[in-house]
Length: 306
Image (tube, rainbow, N blue to C red; front, side, top):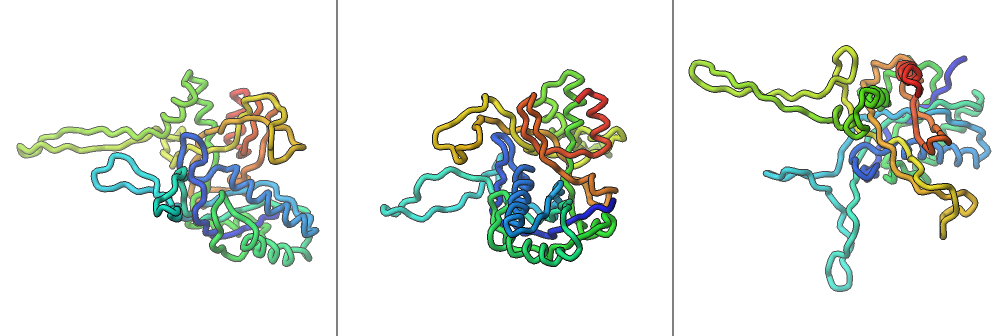
């Protein structure tokens, strides 16, 4: 069966939410990307277009985190937005929000659309992206023409140069199987270790510095590993809350789920499933997360009993 793929290339997003969890800052959460495409699908369905999206892939071409580090500063500071002056000529208090500007492409697997409907679908997608949608709370400034593909090898060159975000949850599982705490396992792959070697050459003392990170593969490969927010974990029972947005849906307090991800060059992918993320609900563990089902990761998870 031929895969049907939608490519929305080079979406330029301004002021997207970069604070995707209580203790990470950077690339927006996967729930934001899948949520944007879910909203797009629902708006298309409202127009009597019966399309169904089955998985979303995210490719980052450029990422600009709005932070600043001055000369001599030890830490970065968030670049905030200035609110209008109040009647006394002073700035009102506000909560600082971490923002980022992004150039990203989205790859969406879809079905339920026939050949004769494709032109209508592309026209409506372009209209909705410009007029009614945000991505991760950011404004869409522009994008390339949406395109439909049935061959991943034909689509893949359009993702370059770009980095595909994939899940590396198996790294966390391996470390925790060896007795590490979840947070220690996370930090172990993110930490950068600086070492120096002192040498004496012709009577002069030289110091060579080296920076290393823990390998992310069995072959010693060091990938671009980052922490990513992939969903939520329920911490209360289902119930009702006063003034909740949807009175028909049960309410539950939840906390963010953080795991490891990796940015990988698009040319290294072999199949559309290598980059697709999907919603996953685990009722027993009260998990509402976005996950990937890549074969190598899934085999390892099954071996570990997950």
